[in-house]
Length: 240
Image 1 (cartoon, rainbow, N blue to C red):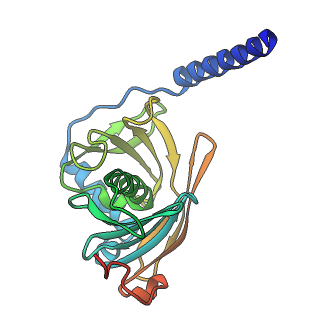
Image 2: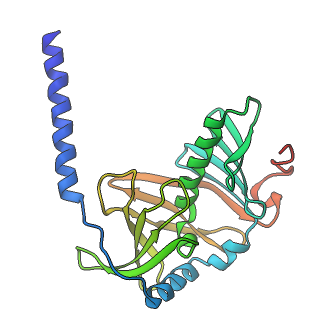
Image 3: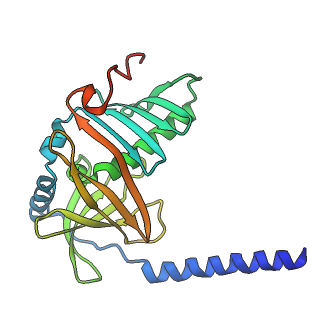
């Protein structure tokens, strides 16, 4: 038993050491710059590169986030069906209310659905949120010599205060962003934005992200103006 405990202790020490090494190797100081009209103009170009105008007019969206949670979103009424394993919630994100399908209205479950929707819809199309209310934009210099478009979220969502620095290609389309967020202790962790494909309205959605070797896939994506565009025949929010 003592030998087993020593082995477990040694493994935990190695994991802790690996975490410390990773932190000091990857951690970057958040770049700081003043908001400018130049940054606002670059944000407009970035959003145009994925046809955000088409996204804004898209009513229905469906997607699966990393095989974990599934969504049907009526953007016009801002209502979301959130499926988390065996649990299904009809959610009103505006006031964090909703209905648990086939069960009691557990507020903690509704709050979990709201938190998941905030996170997973950001991964779906954070580009479209670059000029949301409560955001500031600036052009920053990165430690690796690249320039980036920094978008700082001053309020709203689950974790206000988070910042993202977008790395753009020659067509102003994002290839990745670096994150300074509350839930990740390492500053400047980079996530790729790849495999852009259109939904029926013409809005482009990145279907693949990679963070430190971990893949996050956005699958079963569909969007359009009618329920049939996302494979449904009945309004999922009729009982709300």
